[in-house]
Every structure is written in structure tokens, then in C-alpha cells.
Image (cartoon, rainbow, N blue to C red; front, side):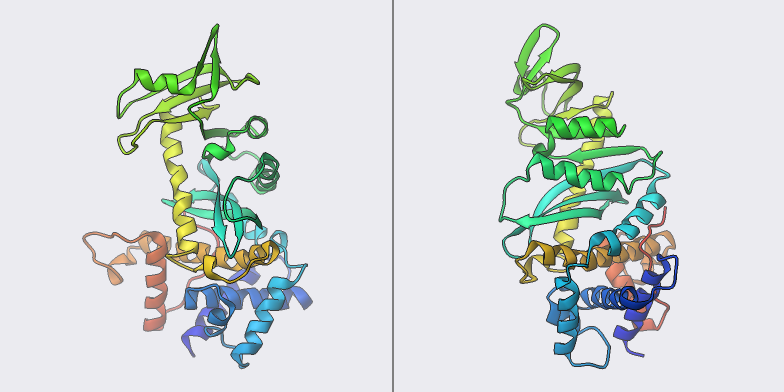
Length: 361
């Protein structure tokens, strides 16, 4: 049996498990196509359809497979609600025994499109949960788009889960803060140094706080009102991490400035997710697609592929198998890179291929 066939069969079996009834009809065909795309993306480390098709076994010519994948991506009925969110919901449920750390951020994908994504932090990586794609080369999404995506994510989060929500300076809008607080989530967002703050009878801008701290320090001012709309009470933090050239400013509904800074440092995990989806992994920025709907559908396959490979990396670490694929004294690989190496090891040695879209706690 070829490596491509082994990989495809293992993925297809895992996809079918999450649906309570044995998939039939169109759903079965679409899941079969999705399994082929996930397997091909991992095998080819690419999201261009011809590259995917080269790594998929089905007895047809490459051109026929490309057309099959293209139909899936172009199909208006292909929705993340059906083909991705069930896996995201299961993933969040599995991770909710501990505090869920969610991150929102945007990145360029495809040609002339940007993706707004929410991810969950897991063992130093950010795993995709939900996204929206629109036309644009750069720039901010409107606050309405932030809220719409967060509302979608809220429906996936277990009811009693503790959540900390993180975002950079694009996401400090008052309406988003209100909604996240209503969800009883904690949040830490970066904000601008020029924001007006009201504390008792005093009014000042955030950057005033930088004059009273030194490099390596932070200061939190609780119970302030935020912006001229006087939203609050919230805490404003000025944090001058030794790694930062200048201080950064945070707004949060948490009680501890130290804990807020600790959580906010996890925000940068989503940058590794985007780079693994692009230059260091699946090259989705070179997929040649320029239509938001099609890119969103392609992300279903590439994000499931990413979750699977991170799972393999975690499985390898938890079971002590890292020494079989990497030096035993020191590992400088990410879970993503470990997962790719471990999959190659399984194929080379004829071992069973573990596939799961839930993580090991």
C-alpha cells in the first residue's frame, strides 16, 4: 500500500468518527473529498490544488482530482459550519478542563484577501477555531466583523468553561469589550498610547504611565474609565517588557496586572499559526485563490490538516517518541514540525498512522 493511500485512509476514518450516524449520500462524498484534500495538503505541504492532487490516490488522472477539489471549494453548500465547526467544538470541549485562551487576529491569505481568525492556545501553539475571509491586502476589519466572529465562537465554547480572550490594538473597541464581558470571559487587549483615561477626578493619556516605570517593569491602574465614552471600570496597564523597544498598553477586565501581562504574552502564538499555514507549512498565501468564499473553504482543509499535525507532535512528545525522530538531549522543533517528522517516520517504518482532531491534555 502506498504512503499516499495509507495517509488518506487514516484521515478518512478519523473524519467519519465525529459524525454520529454513518455518513451517506452527498455528506459521505464530501467527507471523502475533504479527507483527500487534508491528506494531500500534508503530503504535498501545499494548498495549490495540483500539488494536493499529486499526493492523493483515487485511480484517476491528476486533472480529474483537481476538478473534484475545485468543485468542493466552489460549492456554495460547502460551509465551515458543517465541515469544520463540529471538530472545533469537540476540540474546545476537550481542552476546556483548563482555562481556554482564545486569540483573535488577522492575516493576508491567497491573493488580495485577508482572514480574521480566532484560535485557541495549546502547548505553545495556536489552533484555529473559526474565521472569516474578505477582500483586502491589509488593514483592519470593522468592529462588527470582530463581534460576528466572536459570537460564532461563543456557540462552540462549553457553557462553564473559563475563557481568556486576547487581541492586539485592533480589537480594543468598547462594543467588543462589552460583549466579551457579558459572556463572563476575561480579556486583555492592546490599546493605543493616545487613549484618554479617567481615574477619579484625573484625566490622562495612556502614555503618561510610561514616565513612571522603567524597562522590565509594569504598572496597572484599576477602576478607570476608558476613552471619552468612559467605558468601564477597566484596568489600564503599561508594560515595558525587556524584549520591547517601547512600552505597550493593555486594557483588561482582569483584577491582576501581572496575570494580564502573562496571558497577553500568549497572543503571539497566533503568529506561528499563520506562518505554518503560509511560508513554513502549507503555503496558503500562494494558493492562487482570490475569492473570499473559496479561500474560506480551502481553509477548512488546511486548518484540519494543521490540527492533525499538531496532534501528532503532541502525541510524539507525550509518549516519549521524540528520540526516534530527533536528538534526545535537546529539541528545537515546534509541535508542528515534530508532527510532520513523526508522520514521515510512521510511513517509512510501516507503522499505524494516528489521526485525531482532538488534543491530548
